[in-house]
Image 1 (cartoon, rainbow, N blue to C red):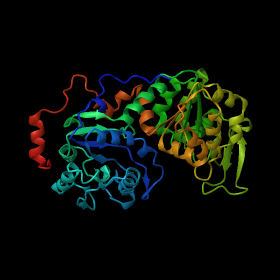
Image 2 (cartoon, rainbow, N blue to C red):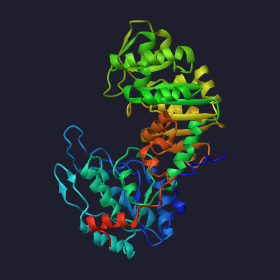
Image 3 (cartoon, helix red, strand yellow):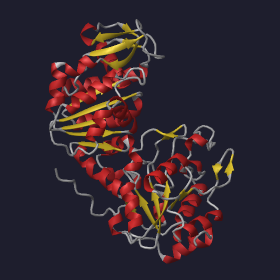
Image 4 (cartoon, rainbow, N blue to C red):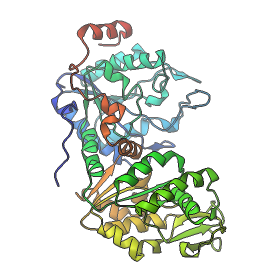
Length: 453
């Protein structure tokens, strides 16, 4: 299968002069929860870019965000140990047999890290002298300026630029325009890393799929996925739904009531019901698992419910999973096995208690030996790995499978119809731009920060 061509205006790491340069590289290593790495896939996916930088004489400064340390209501930033980059550094040091240094900065109890100070100079000096393999900055969202607006954000972007000679973005999953993914590109020559290139190229198979094209979409909230859901609906030949999205659809179509599904979600789903009366693209999963409680899967407290038994006005408890029998239903199986492109952004059940539906879905999809199977999103990937570990390991290097590192980025790109509308990607499109800022502009950065060695 041929790789989709990248936009010729995209600045690529292959074309950057890295020899002897300090290279600031943004990754999406957001794989830490409560101080532990849940799945290193997103780290491993970036090792090619990191190796290339070092092999070509570059000295890397790494950065990523972890979690959501900022409180959107109060504006406070909590620098919690469980959202530190330390586990990532430990993993990299073990994997690469290299030493990484994490610089320490003053932490304000409400504002987080207010800026990068000159204490980092020693670390950069040691990096240039090859006394350390790399510098890993603290969680970017610990910095006040990362998601701020105005002066704090501009100051942080300038501080980041003052650390390095070149900027590489290899964090396709970090698609929001923040200081470390977007603003810094105004001040440094900026390029796409190898994972960024790979993600964009593989998106071409979703945006221009071989048909029949089947998508499987699920979510815990209906309103957050309306726009990408409708964009996907218009693109696919068939669509399978799961989670609250499917529950809301069933309520709207059959006039039933399901615990936990709001009237607002049902009203929103009514539009999709009307849309599908003409399109007839949604493949209904015929049997669901109803539970009296969300606290666990307790004997006698859950049961299988089938759509054929729905009657208008019926009230149901929580529908927390898809019954595995749904995936061997003749119509469902035919659509899965007959597809030539399959895109999955879905956890079918309420984990960790209700996971049989997701396992059955992944297994049935694998029975299709000819389709290109593309999975998007950290939760989707984590479920695949946890529920079908043998299958997961067997398909990691299978050319018929591709695992995107960022589900939100993929959905947003589908909604926009192109990955090049995402601000961090847009910033790497050179077109008529120069290779970087004028020397005078760099001098201004140096004068302001006094952090270059």
